[in-house]
Image (cartoon, rainbow, N blue to C red; front, side):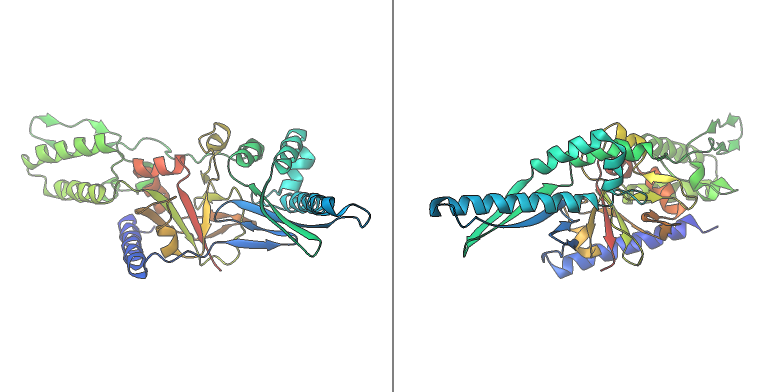
Length: 351
């Protein structure tokens, strides 16, 4: 089993080096993750799908109407392209939109309404040819439409705690310490005292008080360990987002709802509850090509928790695996749990 403290040190080193590099490289514009499609493109960084349309007016119409009719023909062409592109959008590792439309009349009706409501973001007319761009967001309504259907497909939350870990801190003199359940099984080995994790500020204060009491009873090893955890928590809390570095994962496939799994395959994020109970009102993740650019992104702000992806899950190429040590750290910090709940998550992918 890997040493969680060594994994933490590696992750923290990566995070601080990343922040330094981001500062030194300045505020250059990030290269967005854009997928070109016949008839348009998908911008996975901003969560927008755009379709182009071209049109000309019939020869027998009056000149004053030609531009209007050409523009209308271009709009219809763009709508057709948008509908075709949407069908091929990957929702998750197992599903594309076309499959969801075939299986659900509700999804079909909602999607048709969204396509008709697409915004015209560009309009050009030259040499009797009209060119338009129709744009639709993959955020908000789109996610809320497809999320319940994805959740029906068997997404389950991971069991974070197999059972409470009973840890008796010490027994000295006439003082008998009670059993405590501060530390998650995910972060514990056979000897739990070498893998302690503070879960929240209340536990932090409790451990501080225990440390003070133990100092009066000469328990140097326990004291040193508790002080190490106090220092770690206080210097590594208040994260502003989660960054999954999948830049070394060549077979990862873009999806609107990618999944993060532990090494056993349990889904860490987003869970079925995240999707069906509306805790994620927009896209679960955004994408970037570069770690330095991603660190500067407002979605994860200035202090993201950076986790290297270890690969994709079996044949599900839109599902990323992270280490169990990283999972334990995700669950040990309230700010990280809040970041996941607020969808403050980005994935850096290979070019």
